Every structure is written in structure tokens, then in C-alpha cells.
Image (spheres, rainbow, N blue to C red):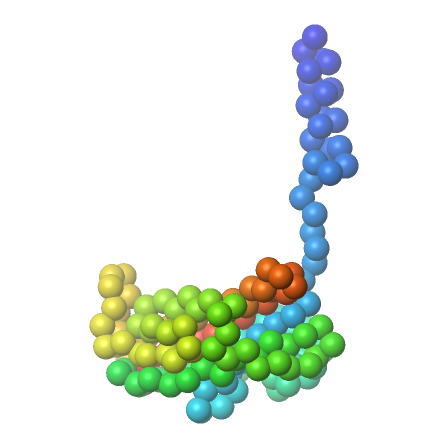
Length: 154
């Protein structure tokens, strides 16, 4: 009986449909710019071994965080990059979700504000990192994209 139970459990574990599917890498991404210029995010860095120039990121090695001043506010311009490399401006879209950490807040319109103080464990001192994740999710078309950026306080 033990062998039968073990055999059934083994078959269930390797049966088709019982395992998670790997759909591969996302095919769409986000490209963000500020008044200071275009940002390079995690997506572009992950493409460094592939065709980085497709996304216009230049050379990935040596990328530094974008420096921002405490108390400053600026507009994040967001473009959705399709699988064929075309850019569509989605700035202010309700399909965008901003997930800043530490010393930043981002309004639904895409206006980012660098805070002077933040809740623990974050501090807002010169040189402190400010990670920002931006997600685009359109359930009606099934398009999803994400990119992560790094700022630091001046």
C-alpha cells in the first residue's frame, strides 16, 4: 500500500499540467524620463547581454543612480515599449502603479516628490538610495510591463 501511495504521489508531481509554466521574459517594458533626461532601469540592464540598443539605453556598465534633491518634485514621463520596439506614451494612465521606497512619493499623475523624512528603516540623507518600481497592467489586453529605477539623494 505504501508503494502504491508513493507511486501515485510521484505521478501527480510530474503529471502534465501539474507544474508551473514558464512563459519566459516579459515582452513589453517601460521607459521613463525626468526633466533631467531618460532613466536606465533594471530592464535595460538585464538586456545588456542581448540587444540593449533596441531600447536606446546606451551602454549599461557604469550606470549611476539619478540624483534628486530633498523637497523637489518632478514629472515622470512613462512610455510603454511594445515587443516590436514602438513606444507609446502612457504618462498619467490609470494602468500605471508606482511603488517608491524610502524618501519618495509618487502621485497617480506621475509627479514624484522627494521627501525630507521617511519612516524607519529608511533615512533621507545625502547619498541614500531611493528605489522605484513602476508597473503597467492592462487586464483588458493582457499587456503587463515593469521596470525598476534607482535614485539617490544629492
